[in-house]
Length: 202
Image (cartoon, rainbow, N blue to C red; front, side):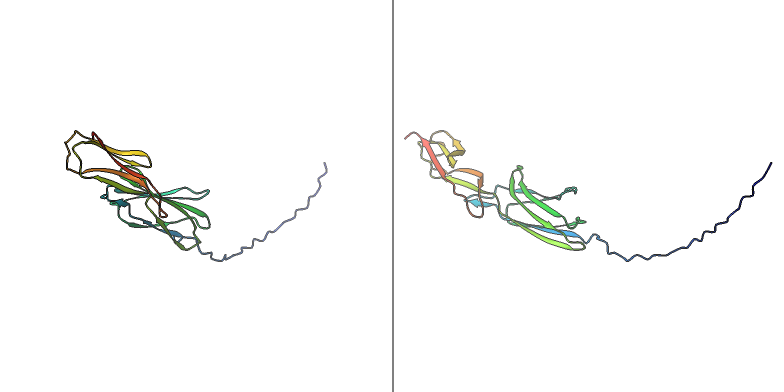
């Protein structure tokens, strides 16, 4: 039997350790935030005490591809109010839409508005939203009540919004007060036709 000699080759691998120092990149940290200031105008009243009482302010932030952010806070009264709130860790360089709504104790929306903003990295943006009340409050006084009158009715734009029935002479000489809390309004003004009717036997 013949044997064939094989050559053995030793291969030496030299391991070189390299150290690479990367430049430090400033982090887009919690300083990226939005400070929102919501200014809500007073709920107007036309010869009426303030029966509309604000209850809740809801702020919602939405952006494409991001989870919505929502905040609720308590309100009271019907006078002009300002609420300032800061939202931290807002994803920067995206267009955020801010939707603001206030509701009264009955759940009806009294203020509503929206705006957009973009937060730059490592910065805080200040956003102010001015909202006018969507409604005013109306009260009509029927005075003096004649002894022949047994019904008073208040209408807005041809639609009866409040009325009162009573027996003849029951309220003679008194004042009948009828109210309507949600008379639509705006900064530029909205024209309404308000009618007051006293009915009875002449």
